[in-house]
Length: 447
Image: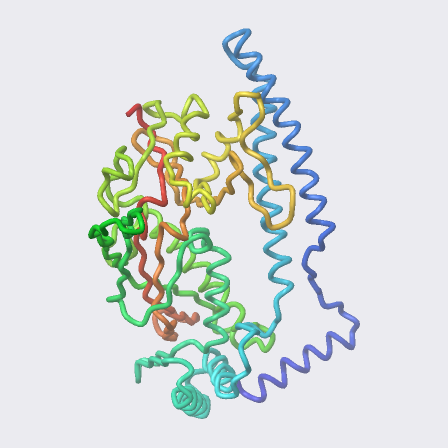
């Protein structure tokens, strides 16, 4: 940006202040606002339970639900969804507002070379054709490489650079906030797409012996290899050239948010149903079987049939079967993973005493629960349909592995779309089932 243009922007800004034009300042929600939303959720669920109980009574008496009751139940269902989403949004905004505006991991020491690289990088985002800016960025890049705090990859004349550590760590944190499977899985930072883990399938055997008894040879552990499949996750945010000329346009913050949202959206589907070709292998990929842990091959998930050919279970007993098909060691950290439409159906189930199995979140930052286990909402989970797997239950930290290649790379493109600037941001991401005994699925089928 030229000095004349910067001066013009500053003059316009000063004129607005002199004229008394108020600048909008947005503040994050306070705890009272989140508390009011939680209170509405609690009251809404009580109304929902009453309406659903009335609908069940009408089915018993007349074999069908009165249209008025059905309409009220549908309305309350939608309101519960809206309130739950509002609570999540308020918590996300409050969490973001609580963070430092400096970005990056504030627990790490400030490294002057990284700070200088970040400043040069942001200047390059706005105006890469300026020879002085290009020189400043290359100088800052060499200083970072000399410090060996980050591996920087450039593509020479194509203008590709690694994102500064502060920006990259902020993108990573935002992606975690937006990607539900990342939040609950094991995530490794790796340096090569050839990364593999060895997993102890059965554990070492042992025996009890007396003081003078003979010691037998016990079996050694069986090791299985877990090799995540990789693909390049990329984002192409774009902005108008005019917006980059605006002194007050936060190009750094905009880039971080745009890239994180795009990466999270693409990863969400891949970690669930990716086919493993140039992308992660999702935990639903493959052919799950009904066979229990003792007789099932490693890497293959077990499913529990819903008992109905094209519908959710008629009885909550099926969910109990899912819970107790999981070994006790995995149940301690287990959770449900499904989409919103399935959650709406799960709200209606009761136990043998008439108590609802789904419970809303009535405290800040706590998820909804079903049968006492937390729920993770993932919109990329399949809908209810014949032979689909719309619900998963298990310990995903134990059960699914995500592998990130270190470093985000970026290339600036102001040629393809006249009047706009695109940034091609990419990184290598892999994923695969880590322990197939730790996740169980619900299959919509009779057997």
